[in-house]
Length: 122
Image (cartoon, rainbow, N blue to C red; front, side, top):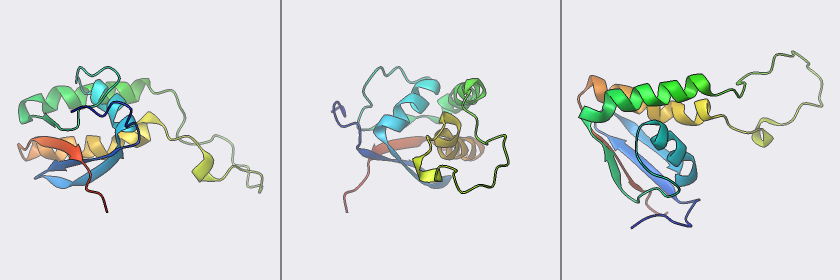
């Protein structure tokens, strides 16, 4: 089953090597594409990055992060009250990918697969 049209479905990534990572499927899709998964516009409900795929997945995400041109930090040190609140600012690919990338790195160190599935509903 695909999450077609379910762009706001919450998915959870699991690994024996790290804490769970929660992410909306619409945000996980570009990260998994960078990791080498052949998805186009839909994310399968369940999937795996095997321990054999971890090196390539990590390298792909790191390359996508290096090509991310959105600045993480503002260069100006203006302390005025006119700054936009952080919640209104866009989140960069780098920032979105970091938790999953950290999970992949820990999983590689501990030779563990990473799987994802729909997050349980509360």
